[in-house]
Length: 274
Image 1 (spheres, rainbow, N blue to C red):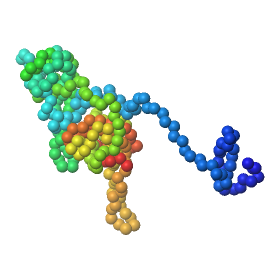
Image 2 (image 1 turned 90 degrees about the horizontal axis):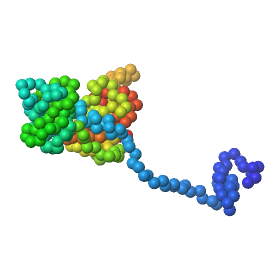
Image 3 (image 1 turned 180 degrees about the vertical axis):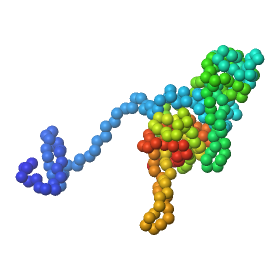
């Protein structure tokens, strides 16, 4: 087109006419420009998290749900005149439902109670890693040989299978219903929580949470003094990060911090993504 006929404010379009590239004002063009979609086959699912790190966390039993503790195998007694057991000792266990010889278990001491800050009910327990062992004989009681220990095992300690079943792929999605919970624990006992750390929340399947659900972490807005009208005003809660659920129980769920825009803390709220 004649460049002397282009005026301020004109919108130009690049088109093909009979195989030739041409520039034409859109206001005078009879050609309709339409977007075109390009489809590429997806041959492999996208992995969202490191499965090895999650499986290791679950098997160490850093946190034990209350309904989980009642169904786990537990240490009944130590062979010989020993009140406590360590690597090299043989112990007897009960409540085991899998007599597969050679199966490995992690031995976990049931520690302090985890209390739901919303209703003051005990919903779980801190788990303290004691050691690990191998099943040598099935039955009730069954026999377990302790192969590793970081502290002495004692009667009542629970056993968690060292191999944990996990989905091959996680598919992040929004929860099916409204969720409003809190972070009640963090692996490592730190005060500030960052990206790729594992946290525990006081909501589970009873509240509608499922594996793959994504939640937004919110921090309480502080109260500030209104020097103009007087009194105090609570500022809005602000988003601090994103968590993906990877393991659920009735009242507790485990989540991986996928993103942290600021330091996350224990008792911060978790809600539907914004």
